[in-house]
Image 1 (tube, helix red, strand yellow):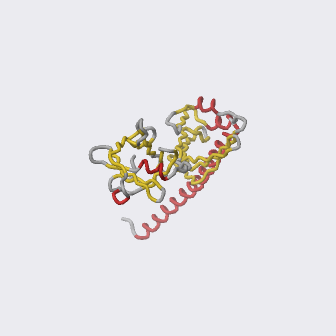
Image 2: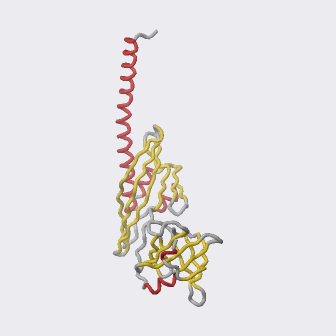
Length: 260
């Protein structure tokens, strides 16, 4: 039977063992983070230079790139693509919001936001990517096994369209027998609402093409041979939901979330 004295000694021994184990783990976690952050920076810094040797050093033999357009590339294909940039093009990267997750003693994921700045013939473009790199420790060195990233949507610049032209899109549109989408014009801005949902601004990207701020949705208005607007396409990633125009000139009081 364990006495209180023996229990006290036992708890003390267990606590000491836990502390002794946790301290090296903490130091190891900090070391892992530093190593993987350094590797990530080196990988990105090598891209504008076309420094294939850096990628060759870090890429595992079974490496896989999951590209933003849904395609995949293996190690050989990625290394072939890495080359110095053409004249007139400059590329730079910064990153933040970096998170390191140890998946096992010999594997980890690094997730972060990449801010890309590209200068093309004197014009500067900005793109953001949410990125995740998966590393595995092999033969004592960290190797990159999976690189995946997605582009963060960015609103296009709005174009100016005269209110009288915007008025041509005002009306009620139907996706089926019961679902309605109302387009109204107020304070010089086109607005849309599906059913009794929230009203949203439709920002003009071009005459007849409008986007919903902060999303990938586009509303595209279609005219017949006589120039009258007869249909609206709710477009996302190349797929359309068709909305047939059934009424003209809906007033703000009768409007009623944006088409997908």
